Length: 116
Length: 116
Length: 116
Image (tube, rainbow over all chains, first blue to last red; front, side):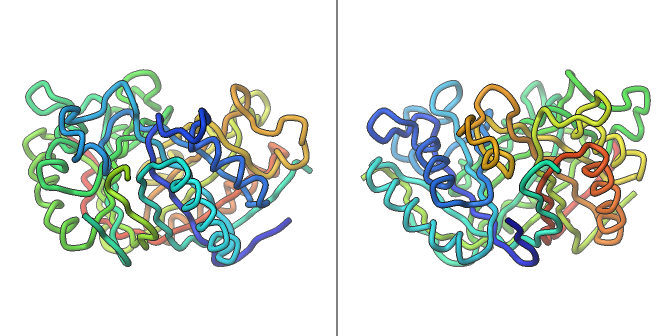
């Protein structure tokens, strides 16, 4: 597989504790990304932060140890990213969780899918 | 709250040990972002890196265990991000620390601020 | 040193275990970035993910504890980033590893290279 030229970077911001029937939502998203043959997905964990929910749950002004913020990053060609967005929205709906999804433009300089 | 369409991704690169009167600078930035009603802020910690300072302090060629590089990421609409930049610059001045601030364009695909 | 205005964000996605004669590939990239006077480089480690290789090695459906995904991020002016890309490609060739390299546009808001 080879993608070249212009692509999209999808970033999905969510909480570590968001669950969809006992499975972490970020794990579900990674599994679905793989099923849909996306080029790759990576989950990064923040050490501090706040998101949409922290407004509502104002008792925890800043989420520290529990429910740390995560981002799932996926890079692929525009068509595949756009097809994947409704899948993520469905996961959010099923998990009954909020979240922020952004898309940025990225140029693919090199992509090799396997060791030579 | 709802943001839609084009937005900005603000990224603030700084060191783990940068302090502003005993408070980590990244923590101060997150608190100020929340006070200013930004949509969210997340701090990610690198496992290795170098920045502006490592030139000067050439003895520590690469900062490993101590003073690891951090990035604070904030996504919101352009106006709110632009209003927040001088606040960050003031924090940098007060902390007497260097740093890199970048801004990228991001499309907001979905933003839900609370659990349904 | 001062960079201002439009710049490029180079992101290099690779695996934690990729090696170039016993040295982690990400470490080699950071050292080369520094030798080439790039403004800074940061390595972030994911907590979960898959990349090009996980297709091939389908036994490990998702790489969990071992070979976690990493990203090396470098921000600098376009010319310096473009000159650095072939160096990264050579490292990938020498390490005999696959990887994804992307480039995004970023505006530099502020860059101070040393404490005042």
